Length: 155
Image (cartoon, rainbow, N blue to C red; front, side, top):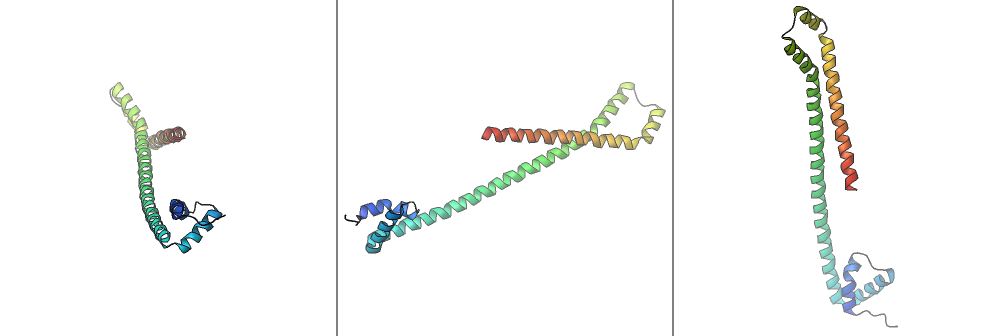
């Protein structure tokens, strides 16, 4: 059996050889041929250079894509935090709005109501913080559920 490979076969297999996708026996035959054929060695060197350039370009492109994805993730995180802060402050003003509407509906506050408000101001602030925390928790919970839903749809 003649084990000499024609140059055309070696040139056809060279891209696979460069990427290390050939079997052991094929690899040995190609290496044996490259050792004795200057033209095929030159072609192999060209394939190898192209492969290195392509690998370098792919690495750069992957780095750019990863950087872009990191920026998107940071932007999403910032928006979630900003949304949580805004929802907290909106929640803070729910008790104030409720008291304000009742005062407007009753035509003002009586002296005894002012006195009660001055004594119990800390309870009002506690209620404000409580409602702010509830609204913030609702916002974060809804955001989490929507994110899980998007991930499920993507799969």
